Length: 145
Image (cartoon, rainbow, N blue to C red):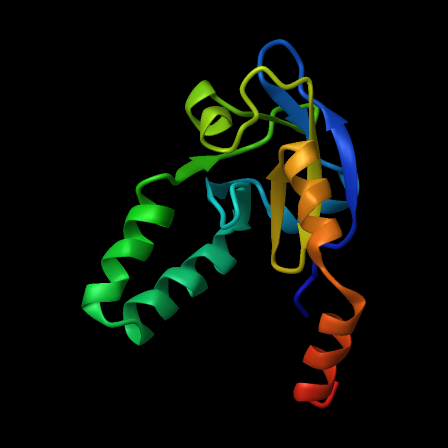
């Protein structure tokens, strides 16, 4: 059974660029995982099996012309990483600069189903506020959920 990541919380980024990953998310993330650029200016942490599934779907289902954009967005910005002994992830300057975290002392960690996202706190707040209740109702109705 797949374990899903849920919820969000603000975490401190220390002076070395390390951020703690919530204890309840660490086991499902695995020993090694992929950190890549997500969509909407966030970092995405993918358990290895989820990363492989996503890349295989891109390779099998997306036309070569469109695939190039996805490869440049996801794969060119991807790094295989692991947590340190205290459950922290080292976000290098390159990764932090891509998602407006350079110089920030906090970030939002969001459990987004099959991946964990790390956001600039203000950008995440704006993203949350942009979702309208009526839009949610319409989507649920459209798909019969």
